[in-house]
Length: 251
Length: 192
Image 1: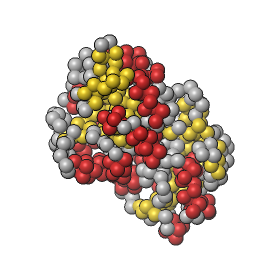
Image 2: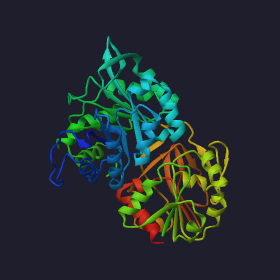
Image 3: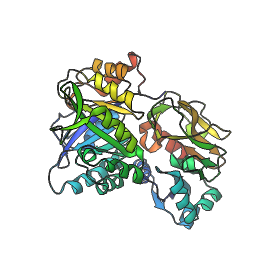
Image 4: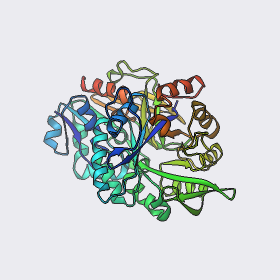
């Protein structure tokens, strides 16, 4: 049986993890490699690194970091943030990333999805979609969720699939940061619209929220950042809980 | 020395990273002598079957791989290329395993992406591995069950999660990305 995946997300700036607490058994919570190893040992199924560096040096710094992560981590990982071109993708995959996630650049130039999937295969293209409810309609946002686009979320997800996306990472702006639970409605809509896996993101606050998003939407994975990062929920405990609730999970 | 076959497929480095973590030296190479003389050969890869087979034929690596006598481990696309035929770009493959590779029929999300468990495991690759262990898969094509099937996975339908014939071993899952269980399988191969 294919298992539902739990995916911690790490925000990276200038090669370091943003904020976070020191877990008991790691020396430096600012070191993405240390933190990734800690998550992996706690049974994270996959990791997402989101780079928010804004400097000119970012590509080089990120590639160097990805190489270090790939050398140390024995589970798959995705790298995203500011990917604009097939050259960006080539550098990250060569450094050892298993997948890359594209967001704003793909909305502005959808052919980017096709170019990446043709060159490197669909399995490595995650299309990240930031969405929010505007005038009773779920639409796409770009630029880190700041700018609304005249594009319905389900339609963009479908188009991304047709262009060769291997997976959708759907973040609900409405839920993100609230800890009130995932946006079940739009996650379910997108999951039903596409035939590729969907990762639900935004709003995780309790273990029950994970149970609900898995039970009610058909998503393949659930992503969270702060609750794992600040140690509020331990991934191993979460997975034990989900298994008890009848959800297929890797333990 | 362990040789990792270099060709136009992605993600070859991750196998070397995994071997490094286990304390084994390896070399990524398309040099025929080096591959022939290696104690073990790994044939990894993520990519497209048609262009991969064209590349292997151009470099005459296809006949070389078939002629190897030491333990060989194909991974993911490697397994599919070791079968007789793939529906992907209508490709004649290496014909080591008597099995055909097909696109998953409708029934669930494609690709099959994530952690899944095995059944009917056969052979030394699966020493100490049980049906409770999960491995990481990511693929849209699958190898049909055949006499060479060494482990079965279920997704939409039962398919070959691993195959073995003589000195040739192969896994559809990625042992190099499958945490502790994957390490055990790599070590089982290295100890053959």
